[in-house]
Length: 357
Image (cartoon, rainbow, N blue to C red):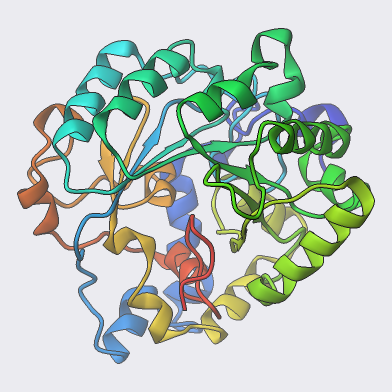
């Protein structure tokens, strides 16, 4: 990648890069090979398979982004998260979210970031939300946060106390590939954090303390078979470090923010979009996460998914903010789409829960 080491440690936002602007990214995703008809737009493609307009099914997942601040600056990050991002959900917005959580028909609450644990009200929010009777309470952790500072060392115990389902990023079972994507020293800290989660009971075969890992490819290619990779990960992590976990989710990198920046800088953008379009799978369209999820941003706006949130594509509904939340109205909407959606419908499909087809 052409940037210097110091530059890559800053978010696009901090570098005042054009691609920090959602409209600039959308321009790229709608221009070039899509504008001149070389590749069909996503809308055209799903019309061909009789799936336009894309509509929600039953709401199952509330995904809440509690802030873009993170202790890492991963090169594939669609959130463009990092230590220099100051967008953090306030307690007032969290209270509005708690109201919704108490009354929702959704069975899963999914907290994400940045590093959600860096929100100063994170623990208070988890304590309150865990009382709401949600069936599956996910926190997406980058693992290194557990070792980042003494104030986070007790997170494994805290997660256990509130029966949090931990979903953690782990791009590979080797140091080289992990550190290349996520930063120097990340692998060793991640291994230590996984061992600590195992020590309190997470990831054990019969344990209801769920520990799942997330894999993102290290370059401009699609993930290989999720089930096969899960076996490889389990074997390698067990043999090398005595680590156990439940499931591996393989997530396709979407051409947004820093991954889009990487694709353009490495001159892989067109090839990657061709790969996504050629791997289009109508069966994956039927199960994309925007059909059963609402994404809530740090400032309370509502989106069809976390990716649309990063492109500032708010829901196509009268209800656009958590303060006006109405599940019936939200269930009666058309989902906003653009060419990045090909990332969720390629091959076995992709969602925050891994493959979908």
